[in-house]
Length: 211
Image 1: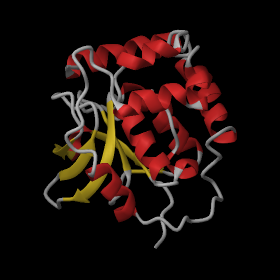
Image 2: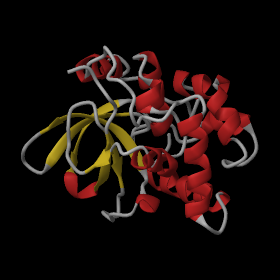
Image 3: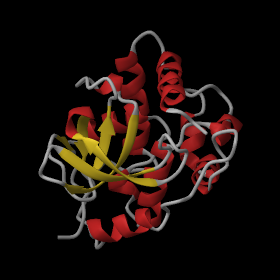
Image 4: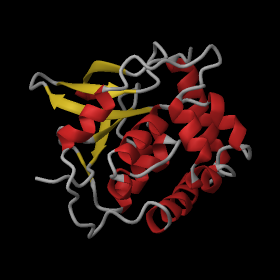
């Protein structure tokens, strides 16, 4: 099982692998994502998929659980076989096989986007910081919770993208300072529905859905 502490440690390790300048490393990764397999979200026409349709796919995965090593899910396998893994592998340590037991919250959100046919505006990555940077670079970033938004968390309640620890999907804004989410790689090592305080949210990425 992956604890939140282990997840935070892994996040910092990957950040270190980006080099002394995090900004430079992020810009390079975002460029690869925005112009390669996941086209820029800027100017992309709205899809025929609604937020609720994407969330139904996410909900169907509730209960999927990692193995004793913290990996082994369909989300790991899919990411490892994707072209995106070959783009991010040098950033993340140099071995595609290492993704097999890596923290997988971003892989889960990416997999859901792929299954919904929304890769161009949901994006795909294994690292939460560059995932958030991609939304921001494409003008799809903000502070309002909305169903289907990709939500990024910092457990220390900071507001910097570099401090992001975790990512999920917003199911609804509860109107009481919390959001209901569907997330992979929770503290229980599963896909789960959670209620999170907005104080832990750094920001939201907005895929383009059908109205």
